[in-house]
Image 1 (cartoon, rainbow, N blue to C red):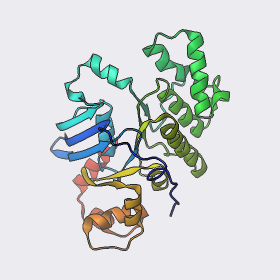
Image 2 (tube, helix red, strand yellow):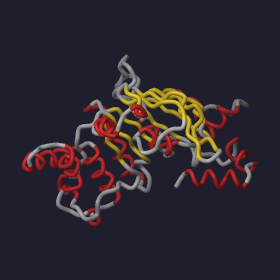
Image 3 (cartoon, one colour):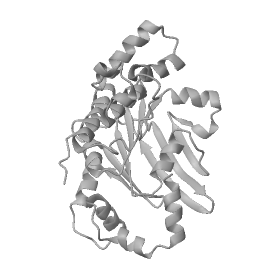
Image 4 (cartoon, one colour):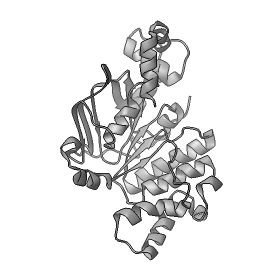
Length: 293
């Protein structure tokens, strides 16, 4: 099992403050199926919250709701104290400037250099002159160890470098929140660990609040202050990294939720998750697959 770094309890105490993100009784339906069922979650300033769960659990849908890409069918999502459902497009644009997003694919524009990709939000959302933007781009690329690649095209850099370039673009406007969609997906273990360290550095040095959606458990246990586990749209548990580590390292208890979480964290091929899959019907499997597109 991975050794967890001391990045929360002692080194990074969570301030006694109001949540920067508050999710209350959140519901999202596709046709007649609840993808998210009365989900509740608070995320506090400067903490790293890892949201995890298997395919079809609803974590990608939750992330899309948090960034305002889709609307919920019930409940509320507050960012910086505002219910985003109450905001008009102009107000929502102002909120979006306060957070950054690292997409799973990186989502770099292939027709632009790495430097121009990072410069894009500065050109779109500020009145800075080009000389100042050039300086800011170098600073952001330096923060992710990529200043030497400023003039390269995305096709000329590796997958890990693309993730770092996309992260530099995500922090271009000095956001207060960073959302990460499977930041370690498709990366080798060393590169994945490097991305994890960048996430930790941004949180420690800049006080950024991080919400990381992942099913990569090595990464999750490296970076999390707290963790939240979704299962079939239901929030099974929100707790500290250590509490989840204790469940992972425990023996089966006979409690369904405990054993389900334990199996997921350990990546075992026997347990309540696999037993449930064997008993699921074809229609349910198709709906779970559709939610992941």
